Image (tube, each protein chain N blue to C red):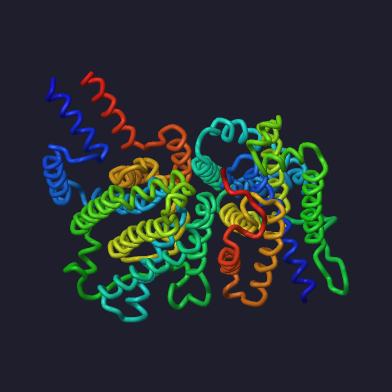
Length: 285
Length: 342
């Protein structure tokens, strides 16, 4: 029972980690919260749905993130750079507007009904682990989530570009003075976080469903996680995503009537105890 | 020549809201005339349908005013206007149907309840930074919109079906049918827009407004200068939610119906867009923006493109017309004025 609970919350948290760490990364470099991130995730999911119909799940898992990365490049050049001089709130509002446009365009193309995606045949069944049977696809999801989490941590910890990203996130002006090119990093980080949104979208298909409200649900969840984790803190976001997944899953098991409110209760409890979140985020300049 | 200069000075005095001007009594008289004309003239020559659109626009404008005030004075963007706007309607409906309160008592109870709610929420979230504030208001709004759909509250809220609000007797001398009548409702919406617009204007001009703007500019310096920065922002948050609450009550009286849609994120973003269209700086801008939005929605909304256009409008107005339509007009007037007097 407890093992199942933990496994299910890890599966949910895997998606949330991929999305909210992307949000935290962009925030660290640009001081901007991308309110359109939910729409990117939705686009990834619908692209994944279409590509999976045409060429199978694995192709979708490869192509959809690549397309999203391209969109991330466009987002960097078309939105973040031209609006560099504007206030962070204004840029955040622009991303909100763009997210609405993207979400509505997807509804216009795909219609309003939810769509299901089948897990690939290799991952279709269940396996017995520690004496209980568990869907193989969720194990794959957890592996992907924790794997990308580990990859992200290794990149940030051991590579030069990761070092620069941490430097800019900690103190933008000093990092720039030391010759770190924040624009180039931002291009990398924006496309990377859009690609992660694409991966999360494709992975969400067989696990949740592909539906028109998924962007708003996901962005609200991710924003809650980012706030709980301490705005801009990646480690905080990861811990918060795990906590969030657990509260959400435990809520739906023990208090199914009130499960929808569980994340908000968590949010306000954390805010009461630690107004700045649990991680060491940076206050905006 | 001297007449021209003093006129320009007086006009810029009125526009900038500075000092006592010789033109002030004229302006007040003119405003009173526009107010009186606007309250009754449209009911004689506009169709029922146009009045309905217009009143809807005014209500959206009032909601936009609440968003714009917080945005321009405190530098905080709230994405949860819908939770107060729709929430107060739900409370009103539940007071009537479940607790058998008189309509006036139900109105009062619902209003006080949302003010208390916003004070509690504000106490928790106004000390965060503006970006976190934006995220938190979005989360709180979604929480309220989820909670009316809870299975356990179905007896009170009827889930996705919404509630019909039909009260007996009269509120302020108007029956349920009077409120639903577009011709009778227009003067109420018009007066409310003026009253709340003036209230926002007065607060902006007060010492409190100056403190709010100073905190927006540099919170640390204000704290250093011995000002509390927490309470003013909390009061501002409660103030704008009270405006949104009045707006929600007027809406529910007029439509006679509350539904989960009234709590949706799209209501909050519509209010935000209306504020951006008109311009967030004053009181006229957001209200005019609400009316413009309602007219535009009537023109294009039939094809189901309203949300798409909302998204486009956010981007276009922030990037190209950050001061909104009214702000741009004022700028143009000021420019031509300067050219005229040399």
